[in-house]
Every structure is written in C-alpha cells, then in structure tokens.
Image (cartoon, rainbow, N blue to C red; front, top):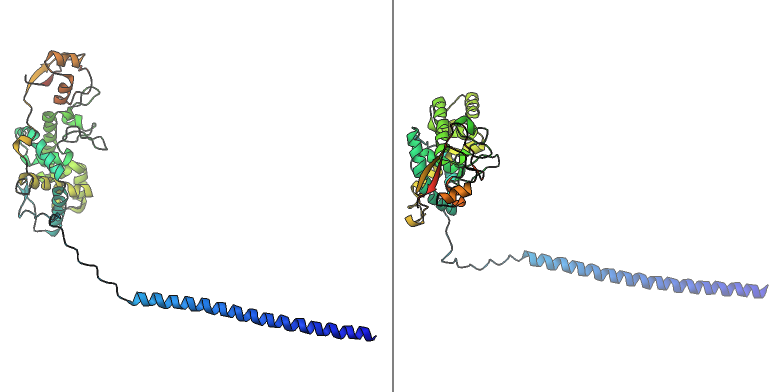
Length: 334
C-alpha cells in the first residue's frame, strides 16, 4: 500500500507542478497578447491623430496663373433693337420672345462654318428663290425659311423623307403640283419647288391672316396650328404654346435673317470671289423619251455628271416622256 501511496503523492505533486507551469505560460501569453494589442491600438490612434492634424491645416491657395493673351473670348451676341418677319413686328419687349430669339442667335452665330457656307450658297440660290417669291406675291423673308428647312442644300433629306430646298414629303408634294416617281422628283427643282411652297404659304396666309402664322404652320401643319389656336383661344403665334420644334422654328428663321443681313458687321467675312456663283445655263425642251441620258449629254457638249448636277430632279439614267408632257433641261453654256 505504501508504494501506491507514494506514487499517488508523486503524481499529485507532478500535476500541481504542470498546472503551475501551464498557468505561468498562460499568464505570459496573455501579457504578450495584451502588449501586442496595445501596440496596434497605439498605432491606430497615432494614425488618426496624424490624419486629423493634416486635415486641420487649411490647403494652400493655388498660385495665380497668367491668362494667355491669345485666349479666345466668347460672348453672347447683342440682340437687334427691333426685328420683323414679312413686315410683322417681333415683340422683343417680351422676356419670353427675347430669350427664344437669343437662344437661336447664340447657337447659330457660333456655328460659324455653317453661316459661312450658307452665305456662299445664298449667293447662288437666293436670286432664284427671291424671283419666284416675288412672282407669286409672297414676301421675300420666306427665303430664310428655306435655310431653316434645308440650309439651301439641294440634296438635303430628313429622317422622315422630306426632301431638298423646301423639304416636301413625297405624299405632300403632288398636292402642290410636284411630280414624284421613280424617274423624276421635282422637289429637287428649285423653281418648281419654290412655286409649290408659295402655294402653301398663300393658302396658309388666307387661313390665318398672318405670314408669321403661315410660316409656323409650315412646320406643324395647318391643322396642327388651327387645333392649338382653337384650344388656346388665340391665333397670334407669339402667344401660342406650340410643340418645341415649332416654338423654335420662327426664331430660327429670324436668327438666319439677322445673321445673314448683318453678316459683315457680325464678323463673317467673305470676298465675292469666295461665294458660289450662279451657273450660266441654256435650256432645252424635251418632248420625247431620252433612253440614254449619258449619250444625250455628250451630244449636247457636256457630261452625264454635269447634266445630273444641273438637273438634280432626274433620278434615273433615262427620261420617259409620255403623252403631251414635256420637260425643260438646263445645260451649261459652252
């Protein structure tokens, strides 16, 4: 029994010794962990204080930079003191009218390349358009409507298919005497399309009693203008709430009128030699079918290309003439 007792005591002592060592190790480990955590916390706090310290210092003002002498200066163009469309005064004393006009003059005046190109084209096409407007008893200011419609680009076609100078739709064109089929499209003929536009303007003027309203209706349609005027119980363009495109339409026309009539004083400089001239031409009346326009052009002393440029209303390589119909072709003078 004694040896077993001794063994028991020895085991107990050994267990106590191991427990004590384990406790000491745990204590040391706990102290070490606490020290590490304290160091980490100190680093974080120092970082926060350091960041706060930097943030509290006001930033230095940037050094002043010299403005280059050649820096372009942009300014809003002055508005004209008074303006009219076809003799009908624009009420520039009204803030809404002034701001709409200001927008269109501002946007278009800084689109200098377009204004210069339009001035070049106007030198060629305005004499023809003005002559047809006068012959039809329509005020000359309507030539600026052609700019708003097509910028005087003969090949202009809108997303809806409206075509050439006056942007007639193919369904609307025949109502005003313009033939549109697979071989010819008279919307491209400047004289005939201008005559057709004049029919519309005179019809609309008879209905509304105002050239401004007639011009606005060219954008939204006579029915569209009438319906809005009837609902709002007023006919005057400048008092009507219209679709945004029509709201801008008359002011775009007015902006082009102002910019082109005052081009020189507004800084758009063009020599006469830089403007596109009227192409001198002779006319040939055709009352029978031309099966080969290239051969026909050569016989007339020109080329198919020039024939097409001077008669853009011809769509195909041949020209069918039936019945009592006849066409007038423009050909260059030799």
